[in-house]
Image 1 (tube, rainbow, N blue to C red):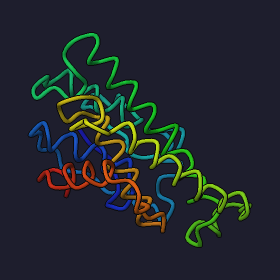
Image 2: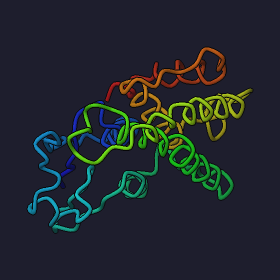
Image 3: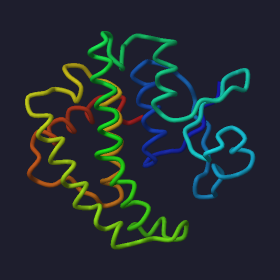
Length: 203
């Protein structure tokens, strides 16, 4: 079994590393050099035609891509500790907050990264005004998550789940590209401190 990924600050490979660390699964990551565009090579596209990481290659050559799909695979192999919930309602809430983390937070963070950051300027045609407009969208998303986290220990309830992993890695990547958390989000900041203090957050 081979897990293809990349070091931080890449948020998606980090999601899987944190998930595996929470599960206590020891799987060495095989690094793909994104700066050299190795993930876009014909050899890698044979494993993941989208040319993205992370990708998990099983012993028989079968591959699984997309972070949540990879993590669900490992969750089925090793159910404890449960990171996708245990009851139908818990599972639905985790899926709900994973989707909200991706659509409400990750989408504008990604658009800022693609269209307003100098690191990506050589990779695509940037529409800088559009890219920069996503800064305020991200700030609004952080304030929305702040309201939703009022009175909650974790995003999907009382236990740490995949939803927290998704939001943590997205916010941390946002910090790395210059999207700092605003001052007026005490619940989001408290949550961020709480999940960042977990030993697995350094994975």
